[in-house]
Length: 417
Image 1 (cartoon, helix red, strand yellow):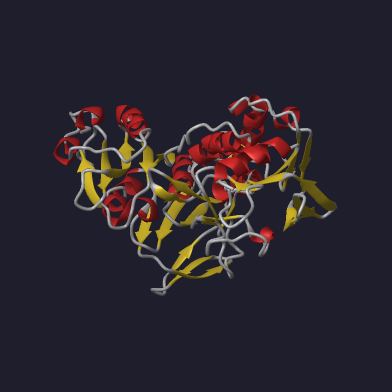
Image 2: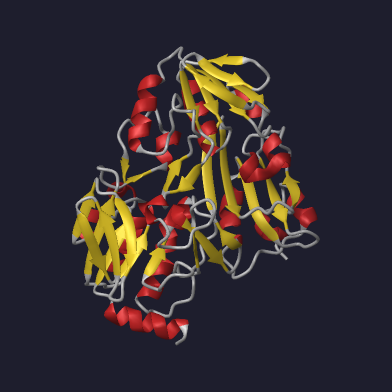
């Protein structure tokens, strides 16, 4: 039986659907189902006791938005009104594939459905021995951190990634004494690589934040952070901002997982190696993209738009894959950043404009020896943001003239071959 025949057959028998998770990806999945006319039973399990909320404001607006940004207001989708049952504060503990469907185990019983969508998101990384450090991934985390960041407090942030830089920005502006420790040496190094990441380092001093590059943490104590070079960075508050991992431990061995816990899925968010009745979307998914190859989760646009492909296939519509481009946006240290696409380690970097100037700049990554751009990064260039988004809507990677993209006076769209 072909995948299309299998999908069509599944669409005819799906009458109950269980979404595990209650974040953006889960909410959009339920909304998409109802928008497409699905009239079967939908049940949602959420580990947190709160109604669905948006996560980017937790760091970007840590101090000026003390209440969560509710998704019912942000994207106009009211989960309790769309689903037949929403059980918040009910984490899943296991999953079992049966002959008749899928069972999901919780603390108060087993929930059974024809189809299960895994959308349990991610959790912040906190290594053993770092119990004294706070993390920032949930509204509860934000409340604890917000209460600790009083003017004059000494905050040490471990990690100069997206979250670390955003918290450093708002904390420093509020009169908090901020030091950021980055072990790899370059801010945003994991996302941008060493060449482009290094170009963002001067922003820290300009924003009144101390950045220590190549700072390897060996111990956290009550009075601060001990480094491998023997120094002690004193702190009243320590924030571990060294990344997040998919929240999939609850699955055990029921589904095949990648080393980081992610679930490899196809273009329609079917978990590879599992029946088509098991889907995964959002932060948990390592998605196969016709344009970008394997796309890791953690992208806001992926959680927002991925459910379109998932639901279209689940209901047997036969529509072409939308294939959203990975997208990250950030406001940090006085700059507006956007990153589209997937950078590969062996890509060749072309810097667009002057990073030391005042007119904004950017960078593009090209597949080696080609004119195919795999990722586009913009700093304070809103016109490039729109152009980059449009360039990553075609079926394949965009082809751009490398010489023309270096010149910031040339619109990105005019550099396309």
